[in-house]
Length: 74
Image 1 (cartoon, rainbow, N blue to C red):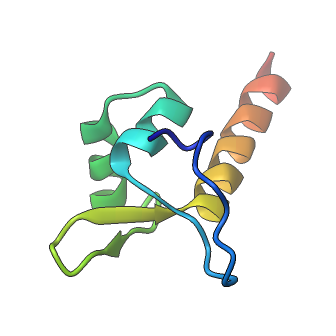
Image 2: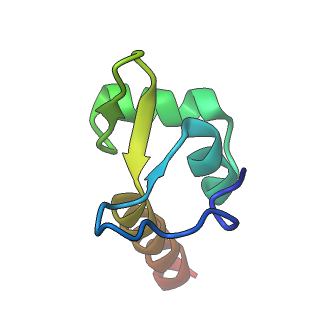
């Protein structure tokens, strides 16, 4: 399931994305997303099974910031 096809949560909880979904948004490899999380560039949550999940709002904010930076430098 991709980030664009997931339904918003009804109970007010924020949507969490997998590294693969984040990678698709940024057009990078999922391992790159994991490295960003390890470096503190993007926050992540660990599931009880040890998998990383990312808050959709934080991901979209970072994506917008990076997109704006690129547009300003052109």
